[in-house]
Amino acid sequence: MELNEQVIWLFVLAIPIACIAWTVTHEEVFKEPREYCIRKSKDCHTIVQRKFFYLFTCEYCFSHYVTIFMLILTRYTLLLHDWRGYIIAGFALVWIANIYMSLYAFLRIDIKKEKILTQKEEETV
Image 1 (cartoon, rainbow, N blue to C red):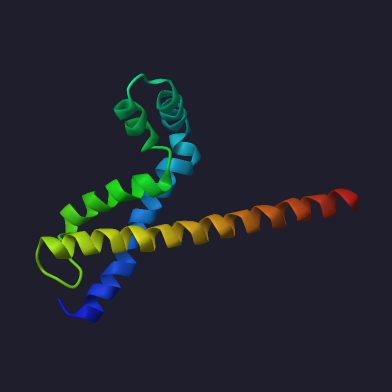
Image 2: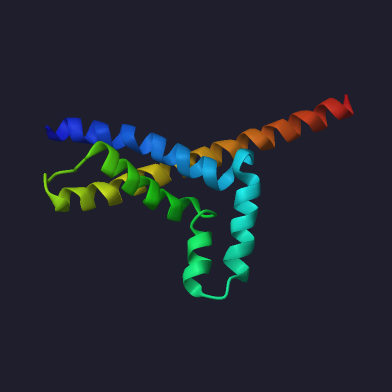
C-alpha cells in the first residue's frame, strides 16, 4: 500500500473508532452499563478489576481497545509492513480518533449552548 493510501486509511479508519468509543462511553444507549461500570470502577477491591471497569467509562482508554480490534479486523499497518507497522498504526489511529472525539465534544457543547440561548430568547418573547 502506498503512503498516500495509508494516510487516507488512517483518517477514515479513525472515524468508526471514534464513533464506537464515543457511543459506548457517552451516549444514552449505553447509560445503564456505563453507570454499572462507573460504580464497579470505584467499588471493586482489586486494582485490576477497578481498571477493567474504568476502561468502559473513558473514551481515550476505550479507543485503544477499539483500535486493537480494528487493526485485527483490517490488518492495517502504517509505514512498515510488519509488527512495527501495527504499533505505529495503533498509536496514530488512537491519536486521530481522539482528535475527532474532541472536535465532536466541542461542537456538541457549542450546539447545546446555542439551543439554551435560543430557548431563553423564546421565553422572553
